[in-house]
Image 1 (cartoon, rainbow, N blue to C red):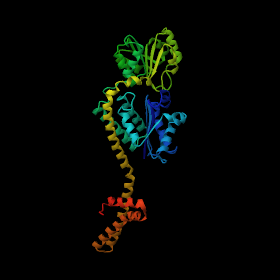
Image 2 (image 1 turned 90 degrees about the vertical axis):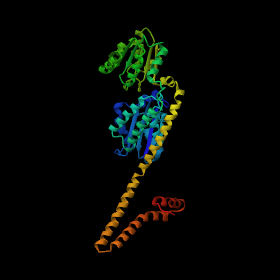
Image 3 (image 1 turned 135 degrees about the horizontal axis):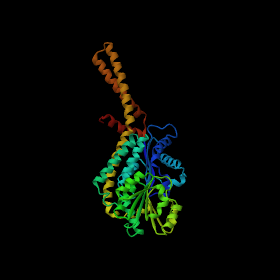
Image 4 (image 1 turned 180 degrees about the horizontal axis):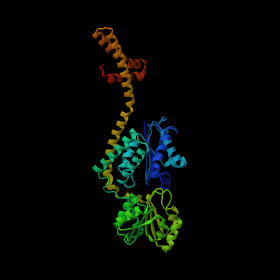
Length: 429
């Protein structure tokens, strides 16, 4: 069984590519089933093929456990081809941006991701919840088997251990806090500005919390479902509008932060051009945290628009890195120990079929000799003679295989068997 992770993130691919490889939440179950079918060569899905998909604004990763028949390199190539095929992208365009992590490297990566060591915001906690959501989707789609179930359960345990025994998150600068800092590059202060949030998910809620603390002149939430917008806006004494109202309302706002799950842009060039005209060219700060993006990229070329994406926050969230290095070293040490423990479990799982075969063949030998002994007893043979024959028969059958292997082996193979057999049978030389 091969464990494998193939993916891309904010360090290997720009947002323009990440948005093309992102999986909408309502499609992950379907994609998991498609991945398992792909591993099976398009035939009926094998029960042993496992898959899970993690897709966030910063990363898309496919975790797999399958009996790849042609080795690790071929399995990596096959998985990369699946991502390209599923998203209808040229393989040559996607492959240079993918990282491919087999076996213990896949395990180590999962542990690091869940612990916040591989995030744009070092130590951020949101990724753990996103990973748990990915596992729930995979489980609902039948993608989790023995190996991935165990991997993710240990992943969550490692993340909990890292966060509870190190200060990995103590000095982190959240994406939401970084958004406030970035807006202050355009406006000296958030106070006095009209702020609009598009979407009502977890990231928007975090951003709204940070912006509300700066006492903006007004705070508005726009969402496709007005009830959800009202619920969030009420927490910050704000207002709520429908997405359908954006064309007429957009010009009212100085700061706009958007993060929805839409597969297509919500704000187009024409809408913003009209808003800029209505504002008489007063500057507008726009932050698009969505992947795929909510705001058309062409908008960034307008003179009075300052448009940023999730990737633009990188320089801000990395501040204070030196304060976190000690915590990182502690976390990496914990992870390395837990990786070795998991791989030991994987190695043990690999010999389970062999042990089962040995037990079955031994049981067959035992029953055969027992039946022979019963027949001897039925004929009136002496009990001592029967027991002697039973013991010799069992010993002969158990020793036949090893003796034949040793007899037929030559050179180095015979030397290895000669060293191994005493350990297996616990005999003394």
